[in-house]
Image 1 (cartoon, rainbow, N blue to C red):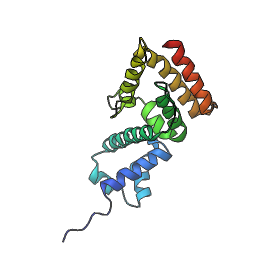
Image 2: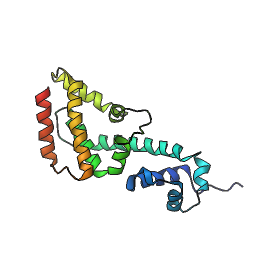
Image 3: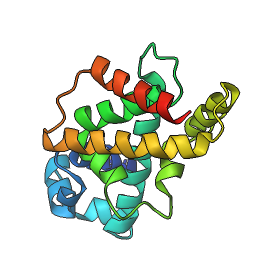
Image 4: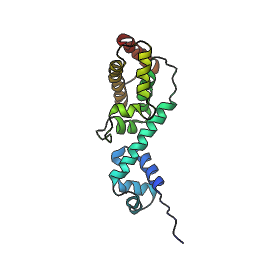
Length: 181
């Protein structure tokens, strides 16, 4: 009878993702991962040919985590782009390591920032279409202007320099929307 594997691919990926989430992707090494799981590095390299293969799966899991966060983020704002902005800024605050991995690393797996944001639900495209339906003449251009501000706020959150309340953030985003629409 074959021996049952105790260290599964799911266990390795979950543990690696947790390490990336708490410490950062740069701290996900075979040795640290093995120590966290309580095994040698052999089971890791039985499942993954190399660490880059594992990093690609961590990255995809981080993309999915952001998508889930965005979908479940609650706000009562009707103005286009503001819900997305609030979710993005709050994600930087609550999941700083994953935010850095997704939106501040140069390794996006051949995906643009727009593709990451738009995700599987088409969230950015929906917001652009909503802005157009509300009479905005250049909704893509408006999104870009708002996005520069939103991304700046999220980056300031990571350094502890962003201290505006959610209400103040909404007011600023609505001002930008009105001035450009």
